[in-house]
Image (cartoon, rainbow, N blue to C red; front, side):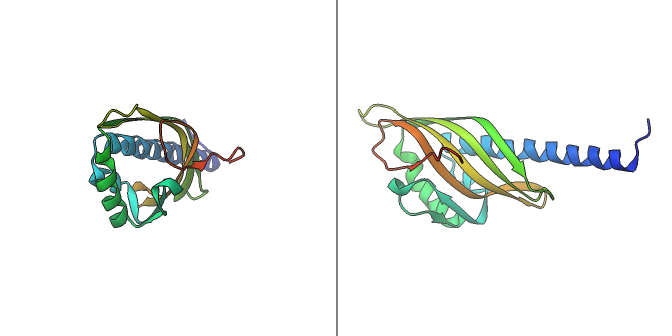
Amino acid sequence: MFFADGEVMQIETALRDLVAHRAITDVIHAYCRGVDTVDADAVVALFTEDCIVDYGPGLGTPTHGSAVLRDRLASGLPRFAATSHHVSNIEIELADDATSATTITYLMAWHRYPDERPDAVLYARYHDRFVRDADRWLIAERILRVAGQQDFDIAWHPVVRNA
C-alpha cells in the first residue's frame, strides 16, 4: 500500500500524538501510585526541577521546585494511614509541536487518618501543564481544584465552572 506524502505526515502526527497521550496518562497514574505508596522520590521524579505545585491555600503557598516538593511530600504523605487516588476523564491538549500539553484530570481521593477521625474524601481536578523532556513527559505545573470534600478541614481552590 502506498501513501501520499501528506497522508504519511498525518499518520506520523497521529501516531506521535497517540504515544504522547499514553505517556502523559502513564505519568498521571504513576503520580497516584507514588502518593498511595508514600514514595516521595517516585512522585518527584514525575516533575520538572523548576515545577510549581499548588494544592490549595489550606496547605500553604505554592511549592516551587522539585527539591522543595520532595521535602513537602516526605513530611506530608505519612500523616495519613492510607490513601487511594482514583483518576478519570483525563483530557489532554497537546501543543502543535507536541513538546508541551495541558491536562485536566478528574480525581477522587480517599484518605484514612491514623486516629479516630472519619475518613476524608476529595472530589477534585488536577489542572496540569506537561513538558516533554527528551523521551519522557514531566509535570511542570499542577493546580488542584476541589469540587467537593468530606471530612477535610482544609481550604482548597474551588473548581472553576468554565475551566
